Length: 446
Ligand code: FHN
Image (cartoon, rainbow, N blue to C red; front, side, top):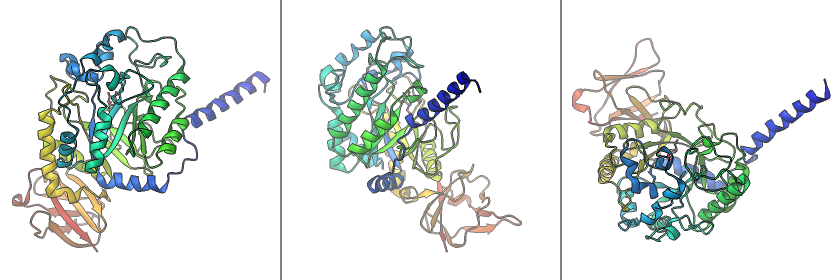
């Protein structure tokens, strides 16, 4: 082999090895505390996603589906966007009101944006004045206030942190998005940006006590960049070994990641077009969804999903063994939209009666079907009939030894038969037993 070709091959092999090592905290072994927190996460099932930032002032700019992306989608020059913090004064923000609402909604954790793609920190950062304490008339650390209240009320707090940053001068070379934002830096030092990001993460990991974890987003902006992930994940696990790391990179989890998320798709489904990976069997799963079509506050997006639709999504997620992270985009005055509160209260009411069939469960022995889903807790299987069809459902390829089959609501016996010539069950649901959102049948296995 010619020397030149040989050395090229070696270089390529080295780059390949390097690229894998760059994308992994190689040799990561989760601590027992982390493993316990993964169990907690899977048991508690349901959280509130909060997309809140200075972009909420714009309310989506009158366009459907624009909210937290307004800087990029409306090409607002960086120096103009930097005026927004001067108008951000959420005087009606009340951490106690938020957390009490979360609890009443039956949610067990909150995942809030500490920094989104616009680069604005919603907490008291010492490494940048571009934050809610130093740059707004409000001048208070909402993340700190929220964490104190979460601790008081026993709600875990996770931080959504955007690796993508349209504002920072060292986020160079720019990635796939925000390239038309006038005033963005074109000269910079990428490693200095990663150092800055890791410093802000260290602030979040050391200023607010024990946190639930870090929900990363934005690697897809520069998929081939050296994100120095091993360094970032190591520092997180060093400061808080129990913190769960997830990253919305739409790939299978890298070593160092403790859960896998699916954005607006059930695990393994791909209606969005970017959830085309497999589903991890090694780490807990979570799917996230909006209540309308926007993550951040949008004044004109009235496309609210019904309570039934959202409960069905929660149940189908649970059928895959996945958590449900349901989003709200708070208004610039610090209040959560009343439409969202109404929906969350209705779901919370449903959970007051039926939460047993969701919390503490794991995915069913068969994947969710058209008619519904199975969740399981020990020797109890909850059959969630979301669509009773013509009055009966078939569970294909499922023949457990059943001790009892009872309707959840009134404890009456269910007519359950093995389908002739198949290895499936047929359950009969008389019309008078059908419930509005979810007709649950409780199977107790031998
Ligand atoms: O670009 C973000 C978007 O603003 C939002 O934060 C969602 C939430 O999962 N994630 C990205 C879009 O995939």
